View 1 (cartoon, helix red, strand yellow):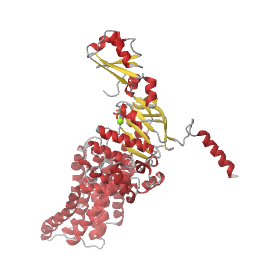
View 2: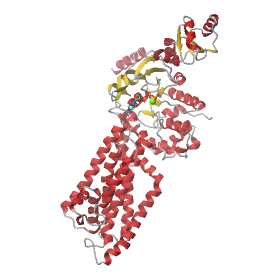
View 3: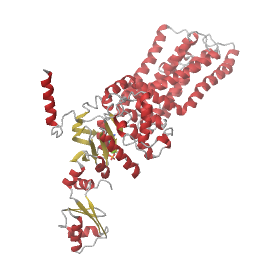
View 4: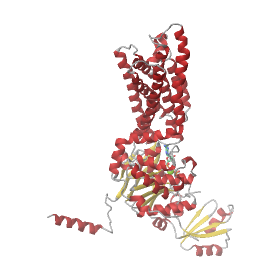
Length: 283
Length: 332
Ligand SMILES: Nc1ncnc2c1ncn2[C@@H]1O[C@H](COP(=O)(O)OP(=O)(O)OP(=O)(O)O)[C@@H](O)[C@H]1O
Ligand SMILES: [Mg+2]
């Protein structure tokens, strides 16, 4: 066994002053954890890529060429545009919100319980709140990437007409965060196993996907079901995305409401999540 | 004009060093007073006081559930305290956690490596949390892998490491920021005897290089090897404090005679052994006779007509100290 220079290992003086290290962690800690989170996504990188490319392709072909042809054959348009143009921005929002329901449930549980990966950084100058925000930032970057791919497919399929259609990218990502951040906060409170996520999937995600005006306008539904849309980030995101993608005529005040609802959900969710992470990692 | 002052300061420091009777707060890395942690109604750490000086190796020795890990986590500020004062490198870990942790290296009892990352990446990403640049971390991770004897595993997946290798990687990871204080919660759990001795040797040399070590353990040989000074804790309270040698001197005799008469007879012969040693402890499988000279005691036992199945004379250890203090053995 060759021996090593322990004193160089212990105090070479290269690391810098602790105060300086703490200062850097205070400023960039969120990004430091996001970096780790992004690296762990490599484990399921191929799933992310397959979903990111496969979903837009699948939906745009099925809905545009298949169902869309049927709708148009009857000489009908929806909201004054072809069915493909109507449905594409909505499906974009829905698929990316669905990705959030995967990214911010089981991996959160893994961080606290199954793999305890949150506990390592919690013993460094990075704070629990930064860990929470870092994880959220990393998945947000994934949503943005996924949205860009979807938008490119929309362009290729002629499913969007407005020069403002690129706005669907931040809109879809914001919608996913609006749904994902509260979900992350909830996941951080779960003590046992992930059974609760089945419940979330069945009784929150599914109805939300069905009743958010994705495949037909919310207004065609009976009023007693419309409330699901009003509280659903998918509906608010969908309306915004349609507005950006083909110029859905939405009153200005309603556009503001959509943005406010999404931003509020994202901010409240992230704030709660910071609090729950802090509580859990210091107890 | 400034000369007089400088002179006075120098005189002061001369009068203190090297036999410093008063420990200044400068030299104290940790100061705990009435440190308490309750989980609901259950008090896990019950108002303990201790100081750790810069550069020393300080141990917390105690059985399962004594409150060692709880104390360690309060020091690192990853667990809030219920009452009492605690200062680590002059700061309060509860309110200034990140600043405190920038000085610390933490080796938790339970490994929490990131098994999505490769071995080397674990060190590098962990270093990132301290705001350390890649230009520092790349050579540093090579040194740390050398320290952990994992150089040839650098690009292995963490999942593919053995338990002991993971432990060594966790310890190496705790050194990534060149910490002034290294917290080691049962560092050698899961290590084979050779790896344990190598680690003890390296930790000893870290201490020589100026790193303050705080070690919890329930192995008395580890405490004896590693710790300059230790506290024995049980049920959240401090039973004794001192260097291993001091504690043995104070709470035990120089030697111990261990006798086995077979589990049935042990209890019967106790009465006959009374008076043959300074102190007698009866354990389920053996009887311990404490005296300065074990061989002489053994002769007296034979002289009394008692013939144990086996007998063994050994030096007192911290195990005996613990038995004396709590009436229980440390490790069964
Ligand atoms: N999060 C918790 N909630 C409730 N009780 C806890 C919690 N953590 C520890 N305890 C209790 O506090 C006591 C001290 O635990 P601690 O982990 O500090 O012991 P320890 O000395 O490190 O023991 P070991 O040698 O087994 O690691 C135990 O009785 C344990 O059950
Ligand atoms: Mg413990």
